[in-house]
Image (tube, rainbow, N blue to C red; front, side, top):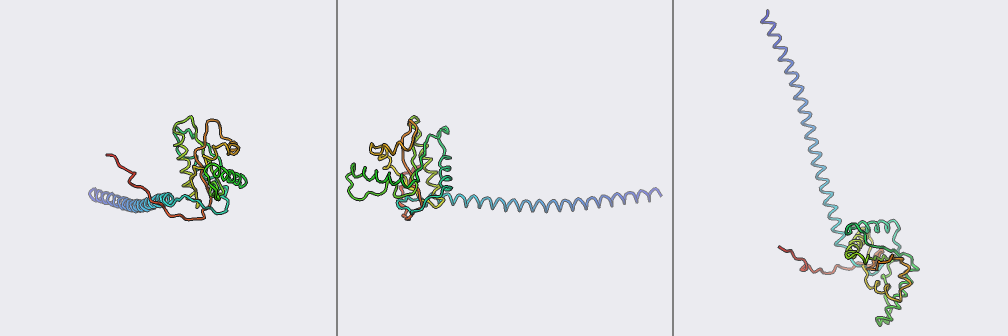
Length: 235
C-alpha cells in the first residue's frame, strides 16, 4: 500500500512537472517569437533610419553642388517667412569662441534699392570710365544682404564667411538664388555712398565685408570647372 501511495505521489509530481515544463516551453516560444518580431522590427527601423540619413546626405550634397551665382532675378519678392528662416540659418553658423562677430543688414525696400543702384551707376561712370548702362548693384535682386565684420577681432572675417555660406545654401535649398558681391562694398565705402552707409547703422568698429544678392532666379547658368588640383593630401 505504501509502495502504491509512493507510486501515485511520484506520478503526480511527474505530471505537475510535465505541465509546468509545457507552460514554460510555451512561454519561451511566445517570448522567442516576440523577441524575433522585435529584432525584425528593429532591423527594419534601422534600415529605414539608414536610408533616411542617406537621403538627407544626398539632399545636402545636391544643394551644395547645384548652387550657382545668379545675376538675373525675377521680379518676385522673397516671402518674409523664408527670409527670416534663411537669416536664422545664417546666424547659426559656427564662430570663433561663439563671438558671432558679424552685423547683418537686410534691404528689401525697392525705393532704397533703386537709390543704391542710381548712386552706384554714377560711381561707376565717374571712377571706372563706364559710359554704357551700368548693371544694377545687386543685379536686380529684390533683397540685398550686407555683412559687416568686427575689426577688433582678427578672425571675424572667417566668422562672416561661414555666416554667408549658411545663408547661400539655405536659400538654395528653398529654390532661391544668390550672388556674393564684393564690388558693391567698395562703392558703399566710397565718399559718394557715405549717406547710404550711414543708413545701415553699423556699430563703431564694424566694416562692411561683402554683400549677398537674394531672390528667385531668372536664369540657370551652367557649373564652372573647379580646380581639383588645389586639393592636396599631406602624408
